[in-house]
Length: 244
Image 1 (cartoon, rainbow, N blue to C red):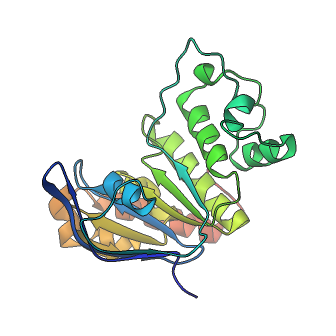
Image 2: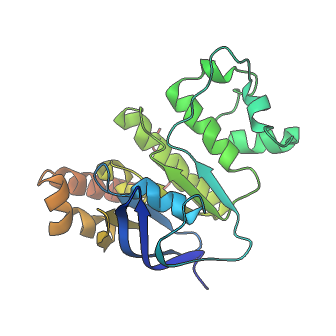
């Protein structure tokens, strides 16, 4: 089966500066891939290039024809003076049927929020509503850009577990950016460490112990590896339990 998208020798220049250089990346159907890297490493630029918002300077980006992509942005500013309910938000700019709105809200763990004002949502509730919106149209690839920004570690872990559950239920692939390797390890099939170029990639445990990763994030990654092993062993011992 062919990848959903594939980049080869991809380079991107913004404001006269090379932000990404010679990036080779692909994602297979149903795969969860997490991109980690320090601030300014080009993570969001890579996502925006993949969805077509930025044009590469050189290299190639091949996207499967007709690929349906759902996108969860890093943040969304809601004008508190503008009365917009969650249900109305899901129908902007195209009206969404009630059963479809209920379906995606349930998938995203946002049941019961339909009548709430967007400006009244907590950080965790807002992220789940943005996730529900991204699930409209049944995407084959779900892209999330630092979707847990502002959430505490417990909230982030619960959100990433939700993403893994959605992948299992819907069958979509997931490409997400995070700075929290210790949180996303248990739900990722593959991790890509980016710092203007791909420093290393592979199984989460491999990346956590890689010299290139430790050079960027320090030697305090042993906790990430320990947490991954704990979650991995726990899930095998208790396969029907999920994080709250």
